[in-house]
Image 1 (tube, rainbow, N blue to C red):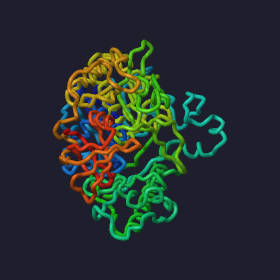
Image 2 (cartoon, rainbow, N blue to C red; image 1 turned 60 degrees about the vertical axis):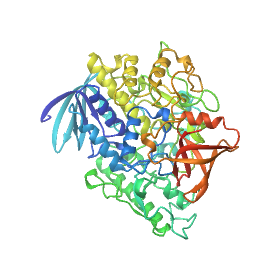
Image 3 (cartoon, rainbow, N blue to C red; image 1 turned 45 degrees about the horizontal axis):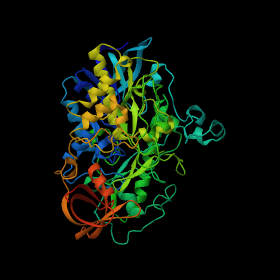
Length: 606
């Protein structure tokens, strides 16, 4: 029997990005909340797992909610700016991310955080969970709750709930997803048994000794097995700067014959702790070998980095404290996000169809836009396209997650706040990323607090009340519908969000606002935002290129170059660029990223 029983209206299990987000939002919304984490650090992907170059939701229209607040908090912590690599417009150090999240948690007197916990059992009666039993420092305790949230990367609580859940592949015949394999292939090809989920990675951190590569750096060295092809597609310098972070730290999370781990992944979901320990050791050895190969090939440009302090739980300062899990167990929800829910309604720039309930009400609670990306051994898995040109770069089709995807079909007071929400295996490749998981966790936490306030389980919560709560949140207002042309700081942002919920026809299939002109266009001539402290005022000539990209010929060369590729994350700048049909002399505000390379423009002065 447990040593003692405690209670809180809301209990969140798991230190994943979604778990900490759910706990913070639940407490900020007024509910006494307990957060239980197995590790010593919060944050999952964005800190403990070291995946510090977030993918997706990079454009300012999608920088909302706790994701946007986190992004701006990271910009405050990194005076040199976040534009530090070429896989993302953002890069930050894991310790800075963890510091921000812990400060958010510690600022909430109604949020208790218990680290170093192990989940033992979940107790339920009929459709309601009553309590969760955990062990911490050898002491067993039972925590009674009104709402229980799974905020772990792998869906840790699902095996304890005595409920069916989804794991691994679904055949095309289940939902007719265009990129899913047929049932015949799944039955006949060993690949699908050997590779039940997307491959995880144990991130290892490097440190560049200088910004510039040393003379004589080999362009495409052949590394030893199994990494021999790792540098062949992009070259050694691009391989190393792919995940560059402030201070010259390097996130080694390389999918092309790099440190993704593909062997015997069922051990990650085994009840045997020894099997998991063996898996962890093999993953760490694999990543360590990859780093050693790159160190040797780089002639000393790359060394091991110092990124994870002892209190993180990391086995060494250059190792992440936990693996980066891309996929785990998934609940059977009231709604399930499938591949078709991610795809554009027509070719080119568009949005996915808005999800609706049986009464036709839009029931979205979060927006994502990652393109879709699956990690397996061998070549890329062919996926239905969902990318388009925007602001001189590629971006993904915005899509929405309905509230029912966070709700179990079999329990009324259980919510999923991380990768365990109800999605297909194919859709998981676009829904697993840090920004969307931040805001899914926020929605789960808000739903839990509203449930306590209204005295009804989350399954009975009016979705419109939850949507309004997210839109009007005083600290991190979160978007629930996608508008390509309305940045998070647009004066009419909240009004447009509400209007689309009431009249979805105000949002075109292209994601443009059709409610008439109102307010000013933000981004065309505003001062520096928190993300743009490193920007400069520049003069030169903007040149449109036939392939849909743009270049800026500087009046005076910067960082050794006169011509720079141009990108933007701002709708007003994108609109201005789209009208550019010939070279034009302009003055603009922008930040240089020599590792992209690109000039990221935040405003055009004329």
